[in-house]
Image (tube, rainbow, N blue to C red):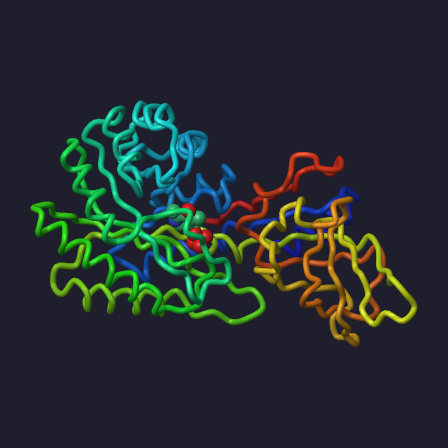
Length: 384
Ligand SMILES: *Cc1c(COP(=O)(O)O)cnc(C)c1O
């Protein structure tokens, strides 16, 4: 929570237009986060993962700072181009693409594509001749609070065949990628993944194919309730692991931070709509906010991400609550298996601040489920 965000929310309330939840993002924080990544991993190029928050103001800032961009669709590519980036700063990093979207991306100048199987390589070879491809391999996400499934990537052994196939079809077999799982708290996760990456490099070299790039993915955490290691520590750990597995032939590297770039830059202000109990004997209150899973807090699915919540009554006695959203869908409960401690004095109409919500919120919010508006967002411009 920055002074600027606090000031903005105060004046919004005074002007009487504070109906409904709002996400406020301080772009000064994003600028500082970018600088931290650039400093911690000076030899890696930053490809911001656009899906984390694609706001035009944020993309324009990152373009100005020199960032590159990881995109997942033609629409995201167009947003990044509209923000002023040239096509050589954009990768099409989704492994699941329609052939006509690959062709559209190619027509827009995109030359860097992700794959994880031969069928995808064939699509690219047909409509994006001579493009660069990197193969994503599977990695288990132990230590990640938002683990990724087996949806993306192939076994490391298969990655060698996929890259050889690309080479034979006239594409540039450029390298490999992986993702250690989002909100990854273990800096050592990259060491294990880089071991697999180096074995793919060696197996490809044995077949006469020289790879040159490792995409280290995202996964860098933002602070929610627990402390997380600083970006500097991730940088050191990754540097050591690259040395250990690649010796003095360290490849070019890319990082794709999403959450770590914008998570801590945003705060959602929400209002308590109702506080109730299901029976007189109940110890646990139900607290209903005007935002829930369908309003942007989808990452509370399985109670994975626990956001820090501040109230005007912090300091009063606390008691556990079930926390829920305002819609008529029973899935719209944020925390129940593990109730959330909030002040006993909390009342209907109180404003609460949900921190660390700059990533994976605005675009997750539904267009009009139950008639609720999509999450309003405000981006406070970065100062020079
Ligand atoms: C979502 C995504 C990222 C960003 O992950 P974070 O954990 O938010 O840093 C990076 N790379 C790819 C390919 C992704 O799909």
